Image 1 (cartoon, rainbow, N blue to C red):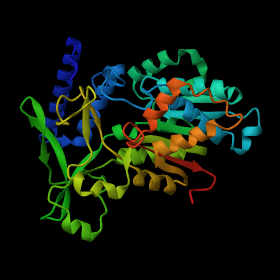
Image 2: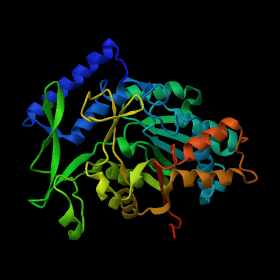
Image 3: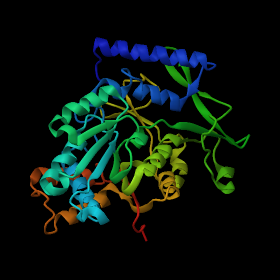
Image 4: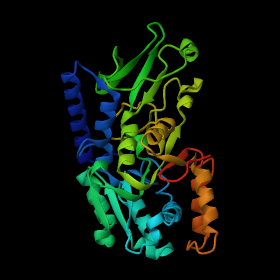
Length: 381
């Protein structure tokens, strides 16, 4: 773990104190979802609140954005192709929106806007970029990064505030960081229980609860699988992710809902090697064994249930247009960049290296998946 400054140490101590205080007020334990939410997002104290440099070589983990601007350039190429297919694109007065959630310090927004200005300048001038950001701290980072774009960028605190969207709503590595509930299987009682978090010395530990938080959806599994599921088998559910996807879909008048993230199909959460679920902690680019250690000082993440997202989108009236690995998705976009009139920059050595990192199975190509759904237009066949 990276050495902490005195002020950082004080912040972590205060976060622990608040967590213990909340646990004491709830019979000694809280859900892991609540623990994760406060550890990552507690105003002024959480992991994503204290240091904009947690991403990249000097931070705790890499993202596709931290590899370099190519990820944004490729997305800009794909988004431009999508937007140019809308019926009202030929109307020069029509404007379109790119709405990003989970923008961190604004780097992806900058890369997208820069690429659109270079590849499709006429379209770029017709884009209103909106960032969904509830944190004043992160919003300040983003305003600094995007100062050159002036009034073309707007901020709001929640997806419900963005208004009607004709364009693309996007996120990159947002949904894996939304709070998850950890559920365990009681093979004797044949029912699910919820793992809670309680104080354990100076740190925190797991406690096996009797009840599941009201409103949390339970896994729906075949009786044959439940009959052989080992006692204590643990998995996660993330109603926050499906709720977010559903709310975003509701704002989409015409266009696409897009995410790139770690994720699995629903059935893959119950493979034999996932008896402890998919929750992970990272610090200094290393996996940390104890996900409850040092809240606020390490990243917490869990795999996204892409089946649940896709079903939520379809229920909201969206059609699925892409559900594939990031490697395949970006390779398809690469093909588009080779076409006449794409406006894509020259594939120089830095871009080639970035592309290899983004798509190689031993780097980011296998770990990440893409889901894109559209309001209007055909679904995947």
